[in-house]
Image 1 (spheres, rainbow, N blue to C red):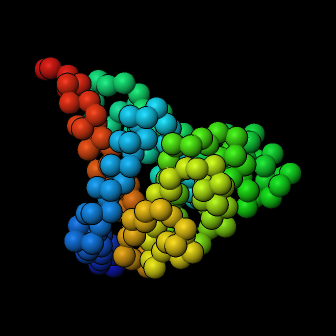
Image 2: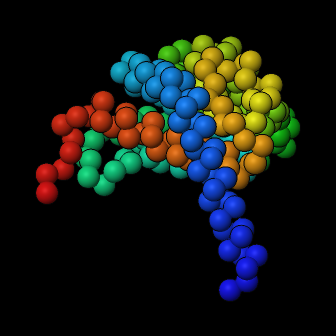
Length: 201
């Protein structure tokens, strides 16, 4: 084993712990407010739309899967209406071809978004143009916007109704914590909305 591999391993794990500790101190209130908003959306028969690019697109799909199916295998609950706007290749390619890549998410929100829905906009930089356009359209359609952001929040920090900011300049660390926050949110939702859904052993 190379000494440099051990060094890289330790450095990355320690960075993750450091960022997670800061999130614990700085983002508790914003995360719980996001949970409250999602509970309101779900209880009012609204849906949760989610978008992001690259690794954040994977995070969008991951979060949608946890909401629609379930987070814990020990829970048997009703599905939560959630949709990642990153999965339909025909819509994405048609939108990019006909209107440009900047509008691949906003076009879907124009079609699917309704008053009472919530958009979760994921961007490590806060400056992804297609996510910004998605947020703009969400506001036009009356959606509430939660921003899962990183760094200084970029342009999206002022556009989101509620921003959860991961205080790091590292894309990898931001994405790791976004996944953690997604799991925390899903776990609280399952416990709060479906307290009697635990599967008996």
